[in-house]
Length: 239
Image (cartoon, rainbow, N blue to C red; front, top):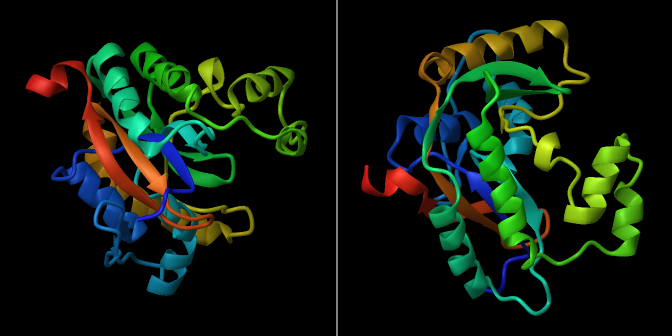
């Protein structure tokens, strides 16, 4: 296989877990096997409409971003990512529990933390810092394109420092459930929220166990992201 176009550090639940199965089925794709999955069916949502509403997050696979997708620096190789991810997992926080809630985040539906989590913030910061040296810096043209696109002064500063504006204290953990709902009728949004509350009830009741950082890769521009390797955190290694 050729060198992937981009790489990312995600949180993804363990492969054999209910959390992985439910999220992957909702999106209609298993990012580990790189295969489509039959999506669940819900009242007031046709199969075609539900497929459309979930098409955008399907490309990325079931995940929450810890370090946003990046191209490798010209002097780095994918082999360098293995020790980098291993060091991250060994030297960041131990595994921890995260309560979740369902929200409209901007114009899409997502599962987000139900309360602040210092451990989660630290994990995301460590991923950004730990992989930064391997990432290709943004070009001046790309920085100019992204600067001012609704960003605050602090987010612009972070964009220039870390190639992404939503890092450090601006980080927002989210597991995306839909594409943009900006032009979706209110009754459809209501039905989608009801479906998400039903399907993800185990998450909303019990939360998730954040126990690993998973390396995902995108083999070509605009292609699907795939699961590469999962690196367990702290106490999860001996759980």
